Image (cartoon, rainbow, N blue to C red):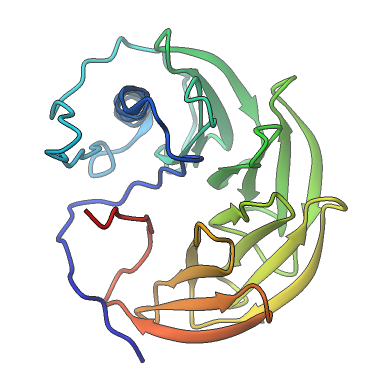
Length: 258
């Protein structure tokens, strides 16, 4: 077993997958501000805040103003935005909205809502293909992923899963999508050429989020109920090791070495 080198206390978790190095860091800040607006308007008390940790070397301001982007009335459910995916050019953002079961399309430059895409009664987490062509989100009413065409902002296809999906992430080469399946304690690998599951791995209880190493050789899967992160070797296709990470392990992100 491995243990983390440090832990940072957080009041809440936010999942923000971003492609590449994001040379325009201000767009990430704008995206976080927009996500704060989405959460503020759709979330119940306790799910409303997005925190931004200031990195002194990047000199990002601690707070960002965002214009209101509108709201939609929903009936019941958990109305929080459960993830934000940003295109490689930093111009578009996509949020998965749990209770409404929708995906919001955000113009990060104009700071406005472009579209709300119906997906299911409940949807969770979100990811973009590396070429920004597809958005993926997990249907929570059936074991399937929605595939959204970013050119039309409509659901194009569905990917059947062995169990209900949750967090997901593509490999840098664009070939695979790794998805967590918490109800079956599995992680699955989807071939993005065929949109079919081609491999599954047994992981510790309640896998939540997936993070792919930048070299594409490993996937990290946070497993909430077991307090561990599973490391999957994507070259030899096996669970390589488990990392003890403490209670409530969920969102994952890379941190710079400097």
